[in-house]
Image 1 (cartoon, rainbow, N blue to C red):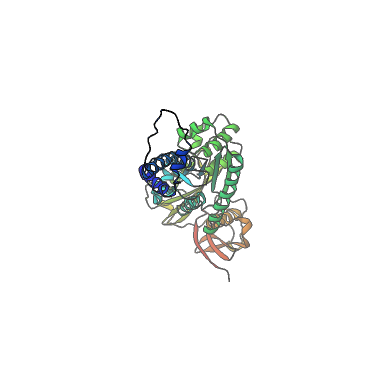
Image 2: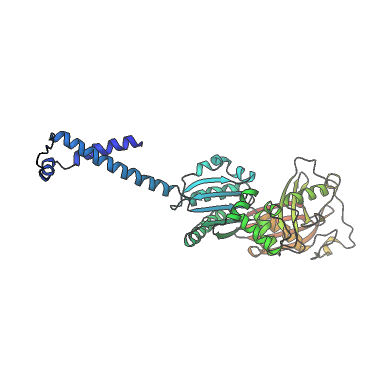
Length: 411
């Protein structure tokens, strides 16, 4: 509504309700000798009083409306969601979104079907976060057990920040449980810091992620902020837990190292999934290549980029099965827990099956693992149950490739 229309409505309302007491007012005016007081008609006087009161009230209401408008559009809290996509939400005191900003290219892809975040303006914060996390799940960012999403709340009011933190953690947990995603949820509350805000702007990340980077830098000051800012939240979390001994190569470099070792860099149909395991010894990246010949897993050293295990030159060897050089019959063999160059081992076969199923070890039961011979190829047959599902895997004992897998409801 424009100011002019508002004044017109106020004047119309006041003309009906203003007191008709002009004579009373004038009778109370003190008579002054030699002074002529000009008299007006009742109708004219009413108009003057009505206009005057209407103008005063209009000014008061417009001023008050300005205050209400400022409060409704003032930023009370800044909430950031980080995986590798970094998304920032500014909200008012009523927990309504004022602006949603993607801070990197990955975030733009997540918000693509929400008009790059514009559709979330005016939405309740929990509704907006629900939509964003749902998009992260659909785009595969929260699939693996080791993946993580970080929620950061920055607010001058510590109590309000902690309240938002609890509410958003519950919201995100609900989405993850509904979608059966396995990611961990990290949370933190922050106070405003001009230096951290500048770091975030310069590196196109959220202030929440900047705080996590600074935590890692506190463990090893030789590392560089801009390099750490390119890592995912999952990598930063693992790196902090390991004491930040050095700068890891990153998931993109690990993927490239695995594909170069496998000889598939020129094959467009090959896709890869990368999980950082920087808190294990040795620190490494697990790279799973999905190819026309099956799925192949590679372990890449997190600091040197050297391939620790995996099948080399898939284009020339994957389609030509060869029997490992063994001296005992397959039926007599026992799984080797440590693994050899020709046998990934009992523990590794178990880990590959669980990771592929998205089931943690403590969620699995009725585990059964056997080494068998399938047409001249040694395979691990891995069977287990989790929840109301039953899983069955055949895994190449030499390469770790998943040859067959099935899952069904456990009757």
